[in-house]
Length: 231
Ligand SMILES: Cc1cc2nc3c(=O)[nH]c(=O)nc-3n(C[C@H](O)[C@H](O)[C@H](O)COP(=O)(O)O)c2cc1C
Image (cartoon, rainbow, N blue to C red):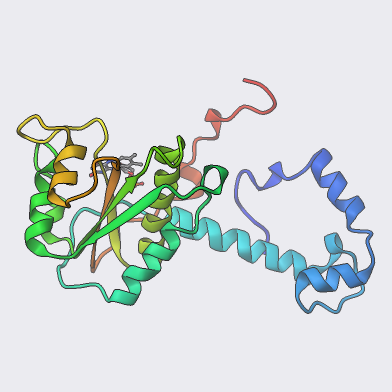
């Protein structure tokens, strides 16, 4: 199956040329990389490898495009192993210098969730039907990249939630305030008894859904925002 993505043709040029030179390595390497391919062709001409690459590309794009922010949930709980899968996703991303400055607090208690809803002014309604909230804290003393690291964790969990059939939405906390004027981060730190040294990056609000909004499509992507080689 050939990709119909508008940018699929971008994989040509010097890099592609280098790849085809590398593909002249012996069959042994091709087989090992393919995990079982027995064809006598080089890497670049092996149809099995090409089909697998195409499938992988479509799968990852499908996962990325399917993800949406969801703010209305059907209630009920989420199994513990599913929540743990989200946390594994969150902690599997890259982090500056490999330091992991993130700390997670999973909140399933309805009363606490409703207190967290007050962290922002105006109150965020999506908390009302949520099953759980994952507050992501960073420790700036561990890494000056804590905001980026925690954002990666948020993104991974948000994507994993969608892939697992859950709805979720990122709620911004940094540089926001609660109704009483308190910085939202301080408000949440108090609600969750978090140590002073930790800063709250964001909260992922998660819940069950019965309907998913329309996925994005590759055609929605604005390639005019991209320049090649220089601005
Ligand atoms: C850094 C960041 C902060 C966000 N903050 C909020 C928020 O506070 N409340 C909210 O409802 N959605 C928030 N969102 C979700 C965006 O509104 C949403 O991603 C955007 O509207 C695009 O919709 P989509 O996620 O369905 O593609 C945030 C997303 C990001 C990445």
